[in-house]
Structures are given as structure tokens and as C-alpha cells.
Image (cartoon, rainbow, N blue to C red; front, side, top):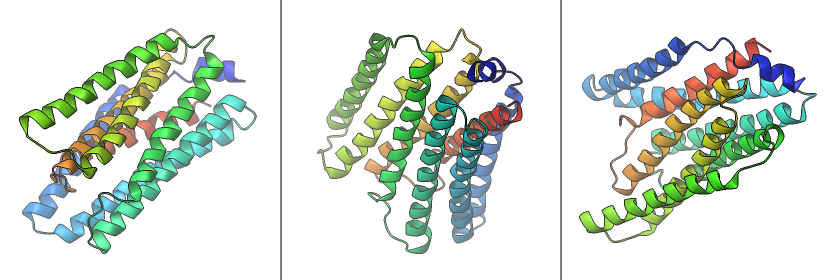
Length: 262
């Protein structure tokens, strides 16, 4: 069954839809920024952003569970998409907690318990990728994975050095707290890149490249967000939010196509 699915899963990808996801993300973000900052509807815009931010991972998670149901006889696809779905539910829970704290309770939401749920999404992403790699990969080339992690670690240490030297910043709890999530995002990305490389010459290649794009968009937003939080520069109207809108929409589209051709 899985071989048959693998032959079909890469068919019918419409890259114009992906472009529309990027355009839609930009359009929504800047329309909310205008509505809130220019039109003066800060409260209403904040509620809309919070609701959309919860719906995005929730819808993506539902599609992941639907696909898991379609492959209920498959140990690989069924289980891996359940893991993916649980990860998106964690993200929806994180957005809910964050929204309640910022829009209803009006308290500082960083650091927050919501961060733990955001971290769980990365962990479930890794579990999803590993489940697929273990089944489809004949042998895991750990050297490639280690190289990616080493490159990321070099970037992280450069990031620390730039902050401490140029800004004269004293390391504090919030800095190292945020750095933990940056490192987690960096550990997640090499796994996804490795999977895309592993499947690049197979019938799964195109599908994994789209997922890689979506994951990279989300992870880029995560890294930028924690950088902003360290300096107290984040708010719901910051352009970093675009990355999460587009990232979830691209993943939802990929899962929709997967369901459509199954």
C-alpha cells in the first residue's frame, strides 16, 4: 500500500497555490496592521489575529489526522501523520494560551507555558520525519545530519557573539531561555533537510520539498520571534507573523493534496 501511495503522492502539486499562500499571508498581515495601527482598532485586530493564529494549526492538524485515518492499515504513514497531527494540536493549544494571555488577561506572555507547546510542535515534527526516514531510508547517513547540525551550531554561536560584542548585552534568563528554542528549531531543520535529500530522487521527492519549504518558513519565523523577544521588539503587528500564516497554509495545502489523491 505504501509503495503505491508513494508513487502517487508527488503528483498534481500546483505551485501557484503556494505562491497564493505567500501572497495571502502578506495580505492578511498588512491588512490587520492597517486595521489595528492606522484605523485604530487595536483590540478588534488583536482578537482577529489571535483567532486566525489558533485556526491555522488546528486545521492543519485535522488534515493530518484525516490522512492518518486513510492510512490506518499503514504503520508508517498512519503513525507518522498521527504524530504530525498531535504536534499541530500542541501548536493550536500554544496559540490559545498565548491569545488568552495577551488579548484577554493583558499580561506579558513571554516566557510562558505556551512556549512548551510550541516546543512540542518541533519535537513531533522530528518524530514524523524520523518515522518516514526509518521506513524509506535503507541506511541513515549520520554524517550528513551531523554536518547540518554543526553548521547550525556555528550560526548560533555567531549569533551569541554578535549580541554580546556589538550590543554589549549581559546574558540573562530571557536570552538563554529564547536560545533554547532557537537551538530546538535548528535541530529540527536538519532532520527535514535530510529527509528531502533522502527522497529527492524518489517519487516522494516533490512532496517532501514542499514540506521542507513549509517547515523552513515556520522555523524562520520561530527563530526571528525569539530574537525579537529578547529585545522586547515583538508585537502582533510585526512582519514575523507572516511566516506562520504562510507556513501553516502551505502545509495544509500539501496535506490536502495528499488526501485528494489518496
